[in-house]
Image 1 (cartoon, helix red, strand yellow):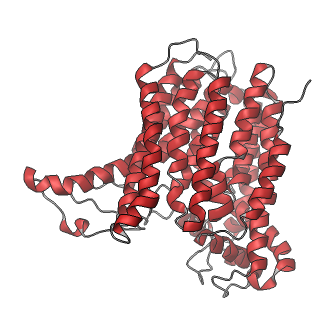
Image 2 (image 1 turned 120 degrees about the vertical axis):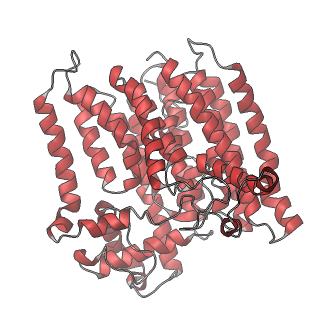
Image 3 (image 1 turned 30 degrees about the horizontal axis):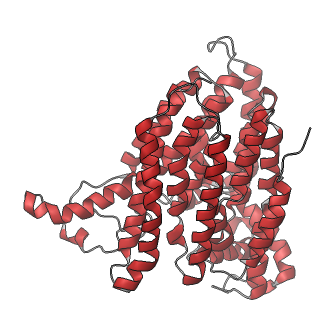
Length: 503
């Protein structure tokens, strides 16, 4: 069969050269977080990893990621042994910087493999669409900003997720899909948000008979349970023997943090916070009480500092209930009519729900929605219509992560170029839907995308020029609120598409 160009490998070579040029770029506190984890796992015995607190950046990822850091630390000794000393807080020699940057690039091989596997699992006309989607993911501005400048290892993690999703495409790969996803949960617990979709899909297609939901395939249930328990046993077993599970859980789930993250992730609570800000000026004229201590909270999003002046307070239980409610809705269809497309749609909607209604959501978590959605965005033009505002709002919302002048042209030019290129390519490749599109939603999308350019110009250039360092949180609030409208609009649009599509 004729190979489709450009190939993922070709794109990877060019992209890697560009990413190497970014090695000296700005790096966030996440760089020090991972350097400290290298030091912890290399310098201390296993039993002390989750108790060490010399640095404020304590180990708060599951054990498999800690093991991953330990493996990297064995190589780090060759680059600069000083980076592995726990008391070297903030250590960033050029050898340390280049080593850690290189590990991000190297571990993206997992993403390349998974994307190629996704393309190879597609056939006919859909293969070209799969290739376009795969390249868009690999060249994603989100991964470039978060991993290669800000600093994290999301490329490798999402590679594992995509591998798990694609394995579920065939019945023969269902058990392997569960195995890979369980391993992913033991590396980064944020993927727990997607677990309900996996549970329902594997239950319906692997554990229950396709002929009747009342016939249980006991052997398959035993296989799946054994695989999952085995993975968790390997990850958490050594710590369970020492009675350290409560300590690990306290690190993984720190509910003492506030509702909103520092930059106001673009979700329902960003809009809620924005309305509360507006209500501060409206309340006195309407006779509504105003909590003055909340008014004086100027940052409105720092850890443990989320208070509303007029609107009711939001609790973790409320966030959990709303997240669960809006996850259950698409899972009903998945259980009744299981298919791979419905599974990817349910995974995407679980990501949406957790991002929109979750407690202390990080803006980086938008990739939980964008990446799985990308796999089915070219199914038809209705799917693409729901994806477009997400692609714009999700990536624009990441801009506040890079606030230094040197990175402004990189994040802006790269993101705009990516959006123009792939939205045009996707628009040409997406087939017509068998059901009518939504006229008003398409117009909303076009208007929404048009507004993004002047908003970026104001928040990044005009506001600092006009106000200097005054009202620093104002552009962040505008950016988050604008992005939240796009994410919420995309979610509503995709919910309609999901329930009216014929798989």
